[in-house]
Image (cartoon, rainbow, N blue to C red; front, side, top):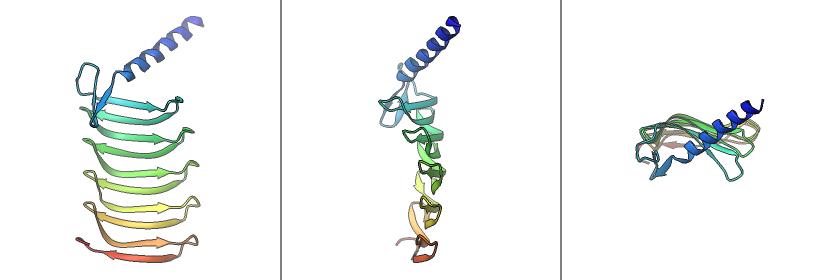
Length: 156
């Protein structure tokens, strides 16, 4: 039993030392030898709480990323492509309820964005095209009734 505990401790320590050898400079991740890093990076706060799990490819964030609250619950999930936000990002409150959905294309806001309050009532719906506000944006009150709408067209 002591051997198993020792082996597990050594594996954990080796992972800790390896994780510390990854350096980030201007958003690019490098190994301790200066090569571009590819793999998973887990970040922790000073108390040892996991802050994030980030996929990296050829030095840039690429793939799924997960960000955590200090209680360990998921705060936000999404994907990067070559260092830029891509596709759908979802945000949750500390109770695990979905509070926002956002969409990105090449790092720019794109598509429909929605926001819910902690009670699950949709409060906002917005649309972007290539980072620009577009379409009709809606705002709902706490009863779920539309209280405002604004029409945007490209170039506004």
